[in-house]
Image (cartoon, rainbow, N blue to C red; front, side):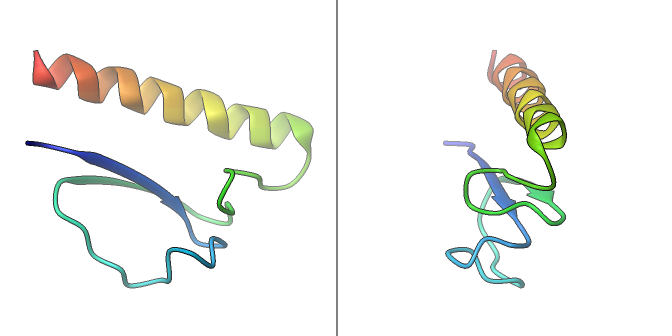
Length: 61
């Protein structure tokens, strides 16, 4: 089954260079909870991730 994996470059649980099967959304500077910068920037990252999940789901049919 196809999968979408989302991770950030500041996430110590997902070291740089990790490869996964399926589609990957890699967010530069984001940590494990998709936090980067202040509240507004982090909230924007969550919107970006949600939009990517919606697009991924549409691909699945």
